[in-house]
Image (cartoon, rainbow, N blue to C red):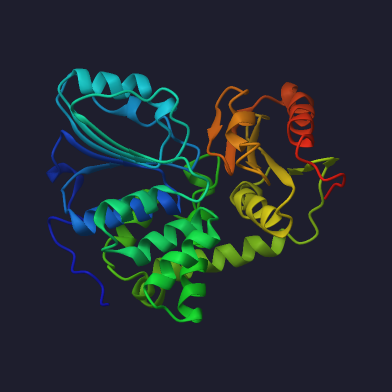
Length: 346
């Protein structure tokens, strides 16, 4: 496939002032959020204002304007963190299409809400959009799945496209790099702001063409490999019966690699769980948790015990764990995952 032509409907070159005031695309700034929205807009072009942020910036609907009938599409942010503003938007006459796979215990029905949701451990928002579109842009769904550390799901999607192994590996690395770029306490930690990255992706119907031709990808790939090199030799601060907890230094590179490290740890030792903590500028901790047994011991159930915590079964986190709660978190992690331990630590 060749890069998709950009134009006023796709919006990559349209100035914000020309965009409609009541139409919004709201999405997580990670690989899954970007790839989910990209698929949808390739199939259903719409001029819309974009609202996104770093990976943990998920309480996004509260930033939308009040008092107007909005047309909102939401991708890959937890309904539980957005239930009140979602209800406000709907009560004001707005319409919302919502695609997500995170915790949704506060979900409700509404005639102007289309809610596409599945919290199965092998499902992500890009897969939900792929289902909705009947696989029209499946290669981007595979990228989103790989980015969300769903290797088996990503490979299954790629297999349906008949891709060669080298192409599958290229999509896998693209997903990892797009996801890596979203990790940080604030936008300044990232190599590229998620909105700018989405607009770069927007010009390509084929992710392999993006890999081959986008200078933004080459820049991100360079940063990705440089930060991965800094991970060498990292050791857990605490070892527990069910896994291990890593404490990283207070540096932008450490915040950027927290997701990579967590994903690689869980891939290497599937029966065990892990947590990766990096220090925020205010002394609190950004926490990434991966469950080795997401069906029995969902990561989101542990993280939701702490303010600002949430996620999904396989992967969850806490945006700002107070330093005073560090030992409490480690004890909670140890007790929670000890139930699934096989009698040995990492």
